[in-house]
Amino acid sequence: MAAKFDFNGRRVLVTGAGAGIGRGICKALYESGAEVYGVSRTQENLNSLKVECPDLVTVCVDLSDWDATRAALSLLPTMHGVVNNAAIAINGSCLTAKPEDFDKVMGLELGEHGIRVNCVNPTVVLTSMGKLAWSDPAKAGPMLDKIPLGRFAEIDDVVSGVLFLLSDQAALINAVTLPIDGGFLAT
Image (tube, rainbow, N blue to C red; front, side):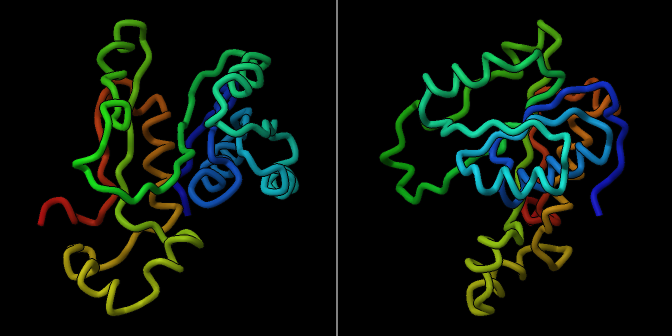
């Protein structure tokens, strides 16, 4: 179960809200009193999320379409927090990566405006996709052997880290990457 925080009176936008980690973040924020704006490119996923969180505001837009995204998000009120969770997996060589494929230094640039920018870096997360990709013991075993806590992350492990970074308890945490990996990076 995800950690509990009080987000009453706060508006938070979550991208990738339709499934997996983003869906878990939306539900936890909603249960913590936030006014949640869930963004996904799949209306069906947003509809089922709205059944679980009736007051959630849904925005169906493909974030890869910059003009459509700008138009859809410009209609929303100012947010107290944004969780940019939407992602795709691109399998490719780091030797062919372009500069725009890497993150910029937003935490440094936006910090002077009181905007904190942090990220989480989980190990394998047992979402539906993660379970499918890591269900073979021959593949999972060697990876699990490198994780001192001996397990992959569950959605709630990631959700708790995200909620902490959004909370007032993390008011002085900026420009950091929080590993949620059971100690994998320490090995």
